[in-house]
Image (cartoon, rainbow, N blue to C red; front, top):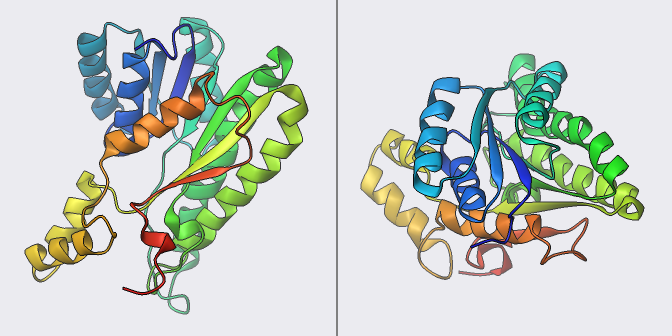
Length: 258
């Protein structure tokens, strides 16, 4: 339970879902954790819960990942309160699904502002310090949309493809400085967003059963399962994993035919 002892980790979009699970797992493994979240009220509640459960140092900071200055301010506040950031998890993201020919310019920009620019803003804010210390791990939460296309989900997969490209490019660029940049590509994970999608369908129970039937394991993932992969990548147990992407989807993307 001490795999991240002495490390400071900043997780964007950590108020709920996968981000909250990662923050919780990091704290349980000994890290001091910063929850960088647009919805500061949610982040503060989650931060208190994590601190009470783990005894770790936990800080909630209001952050808009679409704004470079906001992300830099969050990193500065984290460093002042807890010390240099050793681990960054770029988790914040939004779903933007539209018809390509009727989608508005605003929808396009909103998708890329959060799902790709937000990742770059996080990387750019922590990289100078990591390069100077010659140590650091950046983990970008991509998606199986980064290499599998589901009709009707444009432009989300375009942005997620970009996240993989950014991960690989930065991983290679800063490998000589001992800074590792990796990605995690979750498939269907049981978060509140997934439940909201089910509940928005004409037959929520049928939608749920259809989703559960997709992975070969006949279930979907849990946020905690993504979180433990993030712990591994953030720890000193993965020193030679760089510019890579770990897929967490129960084997779904390896399946050619049902």
